[in-house]
Length: 307
Image 1 (cartoon, helix red, strand yellow):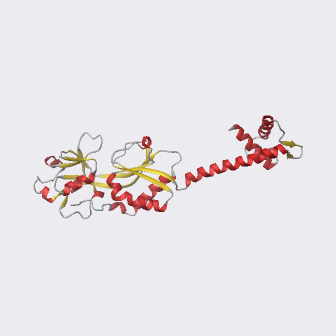
Image 2 (image 1 turned 90 degrees about the vertical axis):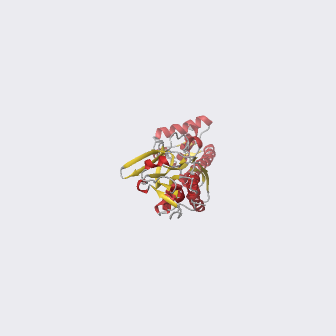
Image 3 (image 1 turned 45 degrees about the vertical axis):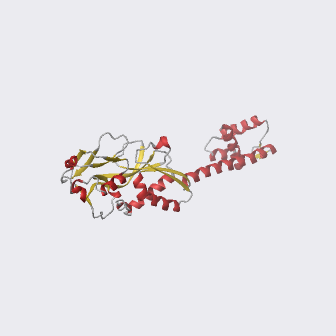
């Protein structure tokens, strides 16, 4: 690197034909500039400049070296431009992990539109309802629903989803009435099982009061849609984000404990901290956030309740 620096200093001296002007341009001292040129002459064993009291003149050897210095400068400038383009131009890879049902019902449409706008980006989407180690697994970005615990990640809130409880009318006709969250202990609850969960607890909120109820049931899954579909068959009570649910509800489905279902989970874009934020990450987050700002996030369901 020192050799490269000396060559670039020499090129600046030739361009200005002055040690003083070269020093000013490089924010250095005249004596240091002169020393670097002298060091080059000693290294190559040739005289590069003819020095007079009035001006500097290139020797033949100096002219040959200057031509190579120009090639070096061009190469460095092209490298800087290429890196700048990679940083500022939407292109290259973007690896995302997102919840399964949210992606299937909502995110895939946004991705299609996004890639039509930025066709040089190569996006890879992985579906998982588990919390993924973004750095260890090489993800640029994750969509997460719920509370955030990893403080090492940057996050931007995109929207929110309300958690609701639903059951089929036929099921409700054969079980005790649901008037309070504690009544769920008498019901077959269809449980959304996160990896590592030890207890099956459903949270409710009414005003400033929160309720945590331990529930039991004969069907659990690590994805909410099968639970919702099972509830539509009369198997039990499902407890899912509202973006999974058709609006209006299927005529045979009933939202239960509606006075207590005011708990909201945030929908976040999270990504590893970096001094230089990747443009692809920023563009994708902005694109999704814009969709939510237009109200698209308020009605995400397609046909969640199928019979």
